[in-house]
Each structure stands twice: as structure tokens, then as C-alpha cells.
Image 1 (cartoon, helix red, strand yellow):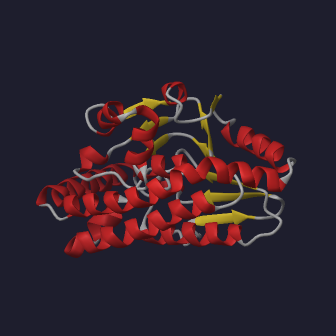
Image 2: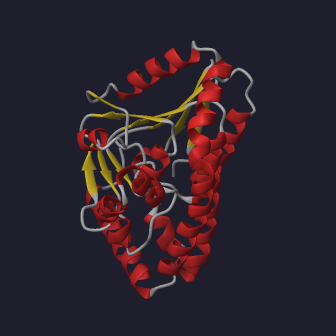
Amino acid sequence: MDNQDPVVLDASNEVVTLTLRRPAALNALDFATIVALGRAVDQVAAMPQARVLVLRGEGRSFCGGGDVAAMHAERADLPAFIDRMIESFHATVMALNRLPLPVIASVQGAVAGGGISLALACDLVVAARGTRFVTAYAQLGGSADGGLSFRLTQQLGAARAFELLTVRSTLDAEEALRLGLINRVVDAERADDEALRWATELAAMAPQSVAEFKGLTSVQVRDGLQAHLAREKQAFLRCAATPDFAARVAAFAERGAAAAARKGPAS
């Protein structure tokens, strides 16, 4: 098994990079990854030299959302496991909001479920061309978490948000840009370079000025987001308690295991 850390922090200069590193699992969020991510954000908050944080994912996908295989492994008490995951994930979302320095997400591949929530918890989002944003929750029989239903409704209105969370679950990068959900779309393989270039530009600005602008633009979201995260958690737990959710998680996990078996062991 691969025992590498699921989250890697590079604080070698004033632009700090935080990398999700479960590429074989499309950087899906299991409990260990969520905890490591929250711990890393707290570390960044305590770094006096940090000016900008870049959040990225190693491999083909920024983040494939919640790790359904990990959920299935905890099927004996799935609601309790979901409770722990969401509680930790939501704490990290709020920590990103409260972080005084700007956070730039560099995304690529299939960005699904909680992966979208994580990207939209950042202040700026750069997407590689070909990125697909897939809400995925309805297909799993769950509800949204990480503030996704809050941010979609805030940006797009109730009708469009409901549509994207249910019957139309996928957006490409260009449409996400047109809808104002992300900031830039660049050619494939250039998202990290563009995020770092943008981060360097922000790092050269007066840090107090940048911090004040982040505070002024995020404070209008913060109180509403905090309250809504609690509503999202309770909605997801109601879904997690249903037989339908457990059955869909099992079916999804079994399809994933079958696909992995067809591929054979990683070389």
C-alpha cells in the first residue's frame, strides 16, 4: 500500500502550496485526508511569512469528492462516519474563509461533490481547460456539503442551483467561468503555472491591504455560510440514514472495485 501523506505542504517561500496527494483515488476525501487538510490550513494560518496559499491536487483530478469506498467500509454505522467527515470538512471550509491570506485553487480533471465545495471555498479558482465540475450528490442519494448549496444559490439563484444539484449535475470549465463560479480557464497543464503566477502577483502587494480586501469580501459570506453548513450537515445525515443511500454507496463502491480489478495492480 502507498503510505505517503495524503496532503503535502510546501512552505519554502511566501507562496505556500498545499497539495492533495491521493492521485490513484483522484484525491478523494477520506477521513484521514480531511483531517490532514484541516491541520495544514491551521499550519498556514500560523506562518508569518505566508502571503498566498495555492491549493492543488496531484495527478488527473483536483479532487473527486468524498471517498465512497471509505464510506462503504464504514457501512456498519454509516451515519456516524458521515457525521465525523462532514464536521471536520466544514471546519476546514470555515478555516479557509477565515484565513487572512488569499487562497487560489488550481483545478483539473473531474472535480466532483466536495471537491467543488473545496474549490469554491477558495478566494480564486483557476481551471485547466477540460475540467468538469460534477455535483454528483443526487446520484449517490445524498445531499450537499462544504457549502456547495449555499454558494451555488448565492451566485446563481435558487432555480439554477437546484437544477445543478439534481437533474443537470455537470458543468464544463468554460460554463463555470461564464456563470462566475470560477475566475480563469487556461490551457490544459497550465493551471498550476497560472495559479503560481497569480499568487506571485498577489504576494508582491502590501499584505495588510490584501488581507483587508479578503476580510471585506468574505465577511459578507461568513455568517451565512456558517449557519448554512449546519443545515447542510443535518440534511446529509438524514440522507445517510436511509437504506437508499447505503445501497447507492455500496453499488458505487462495487463498480469502483470492479474497475480497479480490470485495470490490474498499479505498475
